[in-house]
Amino acid sequence: MSLTATVKKVTPMMTQWHACKRRAKDDVLLFRVDDFYESFYA
Image (cartoon, rainbow, N blue to C red; front, side, top):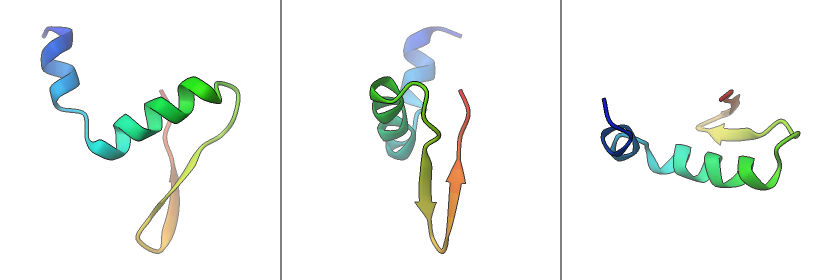
């Protein structure tokens, strides 16, 4: 699978997560999803 095919499948929330993670590499990011918070690891 090419990188282009992978990037097209990224959701808007994960695009935002990657942008935040580039600025805060050593921080834990929590995203509010409905009534709770989720963390993602990459």
